Length: 381
Ligand SMILES: [Fe+2]
Image (cartoon, rainbow, N blue to C red; front, side, top):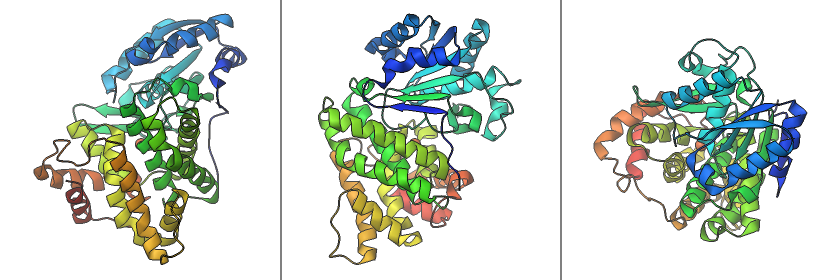
């Protein structure tokens, strides 16, 4: 059993105030801040700048990260990073900014092009140090060894998976999440919940990852609806920030399962946001997976706040899927594939693509055929 995580995790209200000190501890003189336009406009970028400059760290900004970034977007950042001779890269934003920052870091010390490193453990040398600071609560990118880009030619999401993708420092500060609009709070929050449930029921789960997954489900289960309904509720923002961190640690070590595999074609072919694709498919995949691990699915329902002693163990396990469906329904985001303009005719090709994501399908607690996947997509129509 093992547990991999960043060298240092700083978490809690005002944790980001320690950014300058940590940059100094790393010995940084010149940092590249990798972020997106939303973060630049929100004022968070200014806060980052102040903390760095106060500690004598010069910085430049690459503020062009796209949502669901493609390879060209990563290459643009790498070009800037190579020219500037930086000794620290700081990713600030959602998963996209953090993933691009991590990829840019390893491309400073490894020859070739980004596409040479899609796959598992292909990155030979550690990159230059990174600090990752999420401004959403969901992707877990600050603690996971995966960085994901869209290959626009093949219409596929591809991942660089390597321990060198993990940052030197991850800083999780719920105060940076207050400006997140309800739509982002819900789609990133349901992604975090998916990470917790999938890693908890993954074939690779351990008692170490279960600790994080369990606490994550408890925190997200009690606070996701509130964080979406009232973005200024500090307790709910705290639960979502820390719950997302926990689910990221669990995911990084136990992996995710079929929900993510089925969600990838929706993102690659129909540009459905990652969290929305996951949230929509999650209850249907859970329903299918129940027989693969009945006691654990029953626990999922409990962690999400259900009182179940009057039910049989099997009914408790099925309740987990119903509870997740109720949460998703309350988030007021697209509720069906039809609403997302995904036609029924696309299902056979999507099902084939999903079963080919063997990296994730291999973790699934119940084996799935192409026909099983087609039936799950049909239920979500
Ligand atoms: Fe995810």
